[in-house]
Picture: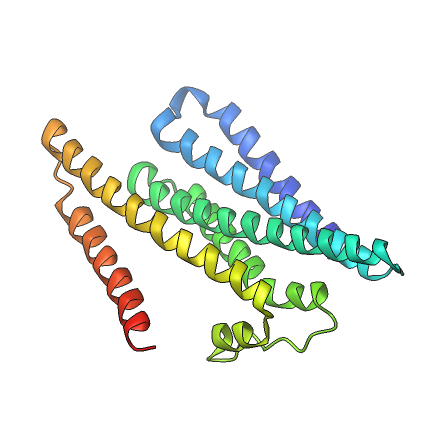
Length: 223
């Protein structure tokens, strides 16, 4: 499996390098070069995710005791967090690459490559549930197919873990609010100065902001 993934990554990288060299005079920086760059970064992140998951599996095959066991558990936790960050970032970049490919380049090969990469990154995100079982082998973690997976996962967490989870979620919620407001302002300024209307994007971001805040406040209110 690892060899197949390495071959796929090598094939992707080789293809895009050769493609860029053969068509450099025809490639526009804002279009195809941008999409190729996004795909390349996404592939690198996938490779890093594979490295982290293999390292976790390797640690599980070894025996540790005492303080060393605690250090290994901490390392596995951090490597799983890195895996999650790399996989999710790769997924977002793949979505962006596909969107830009459809809008700016309309290049069939880049579009197909972006779609394939999007599917691969989605598989890596789905695999996170299984990898979590590798990190917390002693726990009876809920299945990812459980409709109440988030609630079940929170129920089995101890007080310290709940604090970390809720602290991260609250900070993410606050950052999302600030980011969406900033994006709305920048889109408005862009629309006014460039005479390129971004009304649909502004309305969509405002709707997301409204839904997210309403959901959060209603959950808090009904507790």
